[in-house]
Image (tube, rainbow, N blue to C red; front, side, top):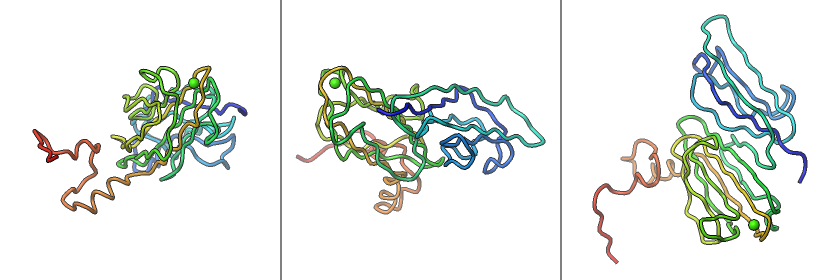
Length: 228
Ligand SMILES: [Ca+2]
């Protein structure tokens, strides 16, 4: 594989909050100059930020403060990852390295998806075939319900059984893919989109005024009987 992309992780973040972050803010660019596309556009306040993965070996972090109100600021660490990326567009596709050819041995990839605050992210597995092993102990895809490797686990997947769509609780998801030193399968192709289920459900049932937290929250509470 090619050069390793840069990754940035905010371990602490507390900046003056303001509408549209016009006072103090941090912007992160996907490249070494301000002409590069943005990975993070004007972050402020103290909400957690996702792991950011550049598409190449350069990343620019810009910090701006205005003339009043200061906070503790931020602490971020950087390094590189073997493969992966960060996504902020409202839909896209994430594939294992080399898909649909077999993925390589000994890879560790990380992808983060960041939706606007108040929106959710849906993952739809269009293709999935990863070495099957008990507890997915060899090759596996892990999905975290948040933006960092420490976020709660939504699922750990291997094998080739069809997988149901996943919806995030909040506006961030993190995916990690790991392979061991033998047996390679074609891997996966995943389509992500923002708030798709919300829009779909709101149309189907106008009484649901707000987005569901998860698909499970739509199930009726209490005992439910199913007619076979
Ligand atoms: Ca393997």
